[in-house]
Image (cartoon, rainbow, N blue to C red; front, side, top):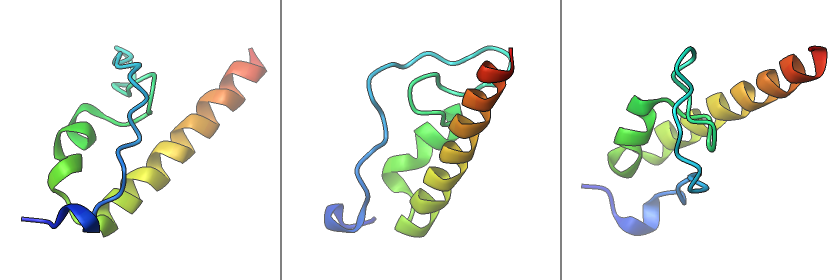
Amino acid sequence: MIDQDERLVSPCISVCELEPQSGFCLGCWRTRDEIAVWRDCAISEQRAILARMHVRRKAAKAAAMAD
């Protein structure tokens, strides 16, 4: 089990709605699987999840601006 002090704060912003096509949460941009494992994964994996969600958010903003 991971010590509470060795984890990052969840990126959840309480806007929990999965977009049907992409499967990403519209609030935090994580997948259902990433949300499910967040509490129990190592800090290195949490950082990897954060990096992926930032890329997704940036891509979504760019796509929205292109429309």
